[in-house]
Length: 96
Image (cartoon, rainbow, N blue to C red; front, side, top):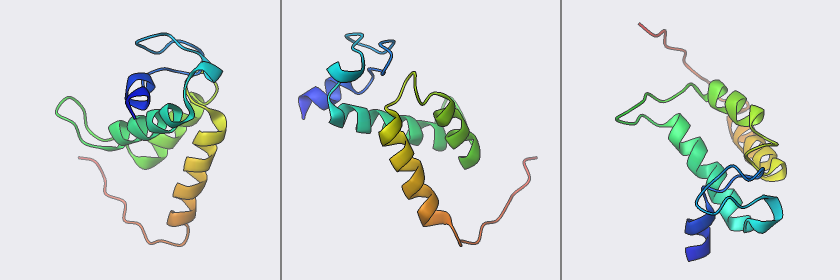
């Protein structure tokens, strides 16, 4: 949907772009895509930055919950992510 693409950089408190929309003026699908895009950007290696550790991504996104992201959507994402990870074996690798 074109509207989703247009609005996915808008933020709840109005500090996004291109239109500076706030909360209820942002389409629900745009809010979902915004959260997914930020999560993906923070947790993926990019040419200009290394991926952040999972716990840091969640910590940062939670700190932005009420100013940038829709809290209900973000809580749902974190809940679903955590439910897929509970009981899984993980390996910690020390950064050099």
